[in-house]
Amino acid sequence: MRIGLNPNKNKQLVTTDYFHQVVIPVYIPNLEGYFKNSLQLLSYCLESLFKTSHTKTYFTLVNNGCCKEVENFITELHISNKIHEVIHTDNIGKLNAVLKGIAGQNFPLITITDADVLFVNNWQKATYDVFSSFPKAGVVCPSPSSRVVKQYTYNVILNNFWSKKLKFTNVVNKKAMESFALSIDNPEFYNQYHLEKYLTLSSKNAKAVIGAGHFVATYKSVIFNHSLRRFTEYSLGGESEEVLLDQPVVNEGYWRLSTEDNFAYHMGNVEEPWMKESLEAIIEDETEFQQPKLPTVKTIKWVNYCKENFFNRIIVKPLVWNWFLHYKGLSKEASKKYL
Image (cartoon, rainbow, N blue to C red; front, side):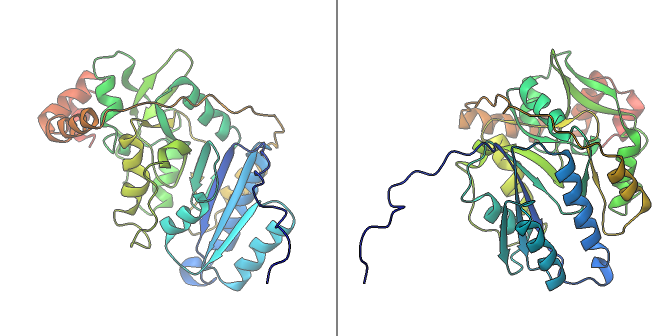
């Protein structure tokens, strides 16, 4: 039986000042073996976020089947109002956990980050500078990589193919790229040419690296308005990240870019002294931020389709691609060994 009218019926939600959501899926099923240091690394990740993020940042953490110790740690952070939203679920896979974090929210910017990322000062400012300087930027990674130059970048490359603003420039933070390679247990991930130069696009006020990685990136939320899927069958890897995070960006006519310098470090699964040192070196910044202008772009599907196929069938052919790399500033030797 129901008596009376629910007082919340037909009421609009109160407008929020938050405009940037950070979604962190966390899977730490135990604190042994591979996951021995994972709780400590999660605490580093979250503390670095709390120290470096502005007050209009909304934190969403998805407990994706964590053990009781981790669940208690997360709950305490929620109770103390350091985390705004916590979603508890069994292990449903990283990308499905991300989908849960995005659903039911409407923030203009969404950062999706792994739970083993250490953020440093100015990661948001640097990200916003790229969005503001390149209206077609749809996703910005705060950790540049020369290895993603061909991954869903056909539109930005073709749009600027003949422009002198698109060219290879010197890597700003070589040590950060080497650190990433070590964090994934692959010291040879970058060769000497990757560590010397990457492909960048310049504007009047900023420079961005072509391509964006997955372990942390900030998206314009409009990208997911038409392409947000309900479910992926992969728990991790497979084609899930490409289908859910890469393809939608270019489908909507946006570019995948990264900041020129490095503002986030991938820690991996083993605690090392530099992590605590980097965390202690962070200066808490209480600078207030205004939402950056985030213009939407329109794309014609058949034109986009033609660009993608032209790039994948013609431009990336070894002879053409090597010529392109040389045309944009690499030596002939570097062009042959870059990718």
